[in-house]
Picture 1 (cartoon, rainbow, N blue to C red):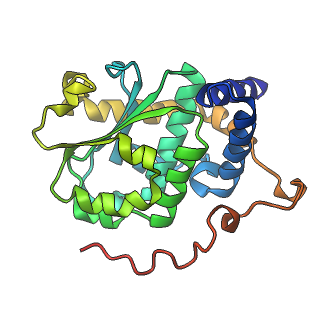
Picture 2: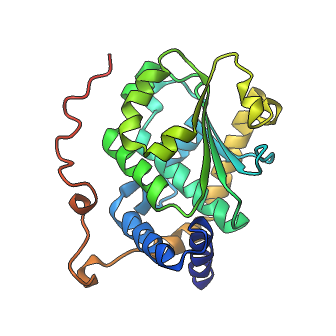
Length: 258
């Protein structure tokens, strides 16, 4: 376990550009949120995780972006909205990133690529907004990565509805880096060769590889699950969900997707 702890320090220092004070705060927040947020605290290799891995392909690509960032590719494989459980997909993504960083170490930056082929309005309506708020906060404030690029590719006309849901959770820096590439567009080539994306025929096999890797590294997740916070011992009192998100209750009750 000590190897993982030292790696966390290295990753945090890297993402904070070696600012010691900021690194300390980010490590504290990372462990705190992993304790509070279910998608980060649940490390079980279970059926729900298996379904998520075979519903969405999530995998780092072997080809970096043109600016040298690691491209992490996400692609909806199964369009059945009944199989889309947003919290499980987020859990799978965080677990994938944890294992990838354990194996790879630091990268200059990370580029997220979301392929919206097969995504429907039913999937947009299925986004759990509480989980989305937590995930985007964790991604922007506490993950040990330098997020440099964010792309929606093969974006359908209703992508604006998805963005209207997610934009309240995105800081101006993330909004500025977001690039939307319409269906049939070749604009992604300005950032990453389109030829580097997985072929449709290869996606299922890649999803199987991710799931097999999760199963093979169950011991890694068991050890990682021990790195959590005992809030009863925090000087000044515990941090709770309401500390992170004041007045969260009822915030999304009136949201309607047309």
